[in-house]
Image (cartoon, rainbow, N blue to C red):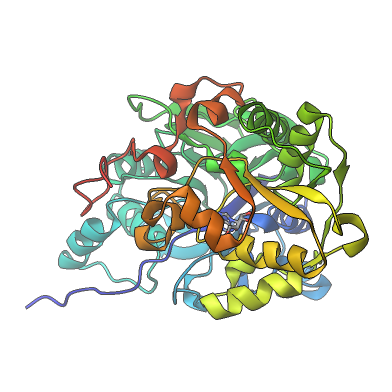
Length: 467
Ligand code: AMP
């Protein structure tokens, strides 16, 4: 009788970074690269580094600044490294799930860091287990590791190509052997991944903001379905797979990516500002000032204010030394987190008709708290503007938009949500509106959380095209 594997499946929102700088120590660059990607995951951080023959690993729970200090960085020696920051939901916030994963297989040592969620991880895990694979973690990433090991007779490039045929879903990977750095982006290009250069060093990163942070130049994005191999011969690439279309997550632009990053030619900050302008065109209201829910609401709030000719004011102050409220596991803690994180500035909002812009409403918890906070300091009216469409469908590709029954807009209409959050009015950006804010054409984006159109089939979710 085979044992059913019932490990909790984490929802991954992560950042990955890799650097190969021949004959240079690269631990510090990796550290600062991860620091710049901290917004992509605050739960664990790790660096794997190679000195040409052995791969060393240091990873732990916590922020990058908590996991690493000078002494640790000084022990990490080598000119080739990958790093990972991770956030997961549910009860999967375990040390064992921290990345990179490092293992020995037929060809030697290998380290892997993954951003995204596979959609067929459960069946792959079952098949692999039936043929003798063993698992230590509940991550999709370990499924990839086992597949690489299974195809380990081939070169790493060949193994990865075979592995890409098996795995479905979203993956931006950085992989390293003792002497090669490899970047892989899934055929739909769901998660971002880019290439940079710093003197003789090449970098692969989730976002361009990490390149800027370490003074590297942006070279180009890794293309959907591409495997990029960097070693002593330079940079080599092959298009391993082609999908019917690109499906880059539009939520990266709404919330997840840092505003100073550019993804596939679309600047995140410009996109957010354009979303705000479009929001104003679609939903102009009479108000005195526009405020934002910092930080992801700030660019669209400025866009809204600009389009309406209204003053943009700092009505809410954020304590930036607290991780995203979302990293806290329970609803109760999340509610406490909002109070810790944000405060209303009474002198700005008191007696005013305020437009408050946030990037999204997922469960409705955050907005409800903030509206109450504004009421407590005497705001006259609160008009809540959301710079993305209602989140109606869960994401299976690595953004924690949770179970469908936790998505407030999936269960309730706008009037209910307005009443629930306590706003005088509530407006969302339309689906056409958000797409009009992007430089890239609509067909390049995944909008499944808004429209239920899942580009990649999801195992066990036969009705991913319906609600
Ligand atoms: P909620 O209380 O669930 O409605 O949370 C919405 C707030 O969380 C918004 O202010 C967003 O900026 C932020 N947010 C949206 N999506 C995510 C996500 N996937 N992970 C963490 N925070 C998010």
